[in-house]
Image 1 (tube, rainbow, N blue to C red):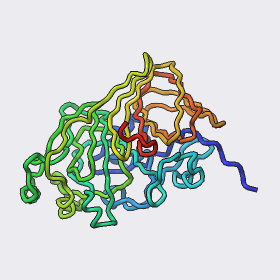
Image 2: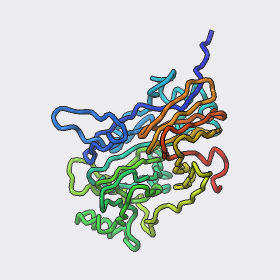
Image 3: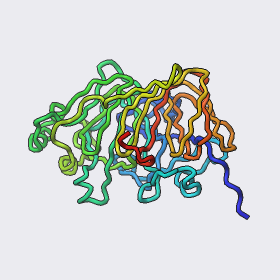
Image 4: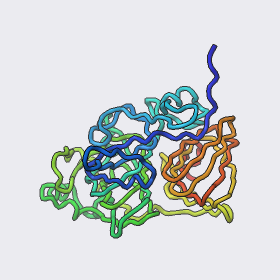
Length: 350
């Protein structure tokens, strides 16, 4: 006799921490338990909050598969791929998986204590010619930034491919990149093919398509890490770059709630949600939705028969599609990034 399935509830996952030469220790402020190490603590650059990859690139993830493990509740210890297979539309709604059956988004926090390498992810043309490569479009929400911190986003207008190659040889790549000052609350969308780098002193929440194919083109004089100059130059978009913040649309849902649209692309939608302490509201979902909690705390009543789930700053929750009767109650003024999937609702242009 087959045992009954546990009812679904908002899922949190064990963070997958990645040591990086450019990392630091500021993810501790988001509640991440960073390794102490022997002697000086190791620099941690990334916390993968929700990942479902059969393989990662050696340059980005270390080469191994990464499947997030549920951290709490009756499903603790199960991985995301197993739950997709077992729960199907109850978890995923109409959202399609990746071709290999995985969750179609990768969620991270990044701490850049030093400049990240200048890199690019494969362009559409490159992917058509190299099936082993995958598009990677991403968005950065600036959680924290030191004074005068910046990101590098796109190649300056008028720069030619040959000129860029010369800059690589002369170690002057920085002069050809758009340097964009940032502050907490800014959000930037970087489609595949955009030459980019996080600058020192920035902590970001990153939402991206589930690929880790990365081509490094410049590493600020650091040695010992492989560069992929030929692949990168082939993929970089040379032309006008959007160096502005993504155009925002703010909707006031009443005296207790505001929602600000940050990104709306073919792969994901990001909205910043603010709710006041003590407020209680239905959150009926018919598709999976991810919350990255930036401030505050609250409780979600799933409405599925499962126990209520509490959450706080720094946690990332995957709310299943079957939460038609869910309600959230806020214990503090609370802010989160809400990641949804317009392709699962047929309203990409809404």
